[in-house]
Length: 115
Image (cartoon, rainbow, N blue to C red; front, side):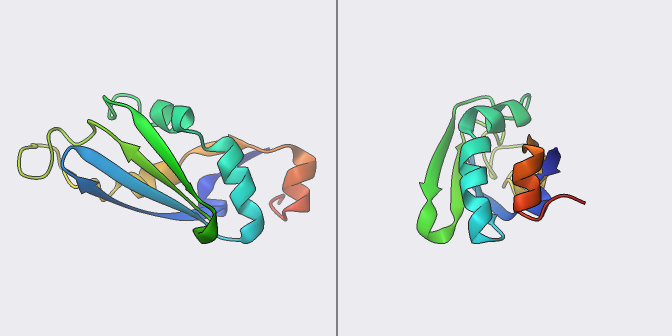
């Protein structure tokens, strides 16, 4: 079953220079392991293909049920230099929540995600 991250998490984003910072926070405790397993730095890098020119780093924050991603070289030089519409990366959180992940049907049912 393909599940959009909007059913599993909420997100916040911002910037530090040319690096977008995106926090992904599980809506329920039981969703966090699924996020850890499926939302890898490589998946996020692919999702932001064409936008993120540098590396993607992932940090796990289990006490907050969260993952934090740094998307380097993603803001056209940063807020004071960039001609991008979103030079501070505020919409990156919404963009990440559009990512869909594959969840085995049985696991999706056990987590209450099947429709």
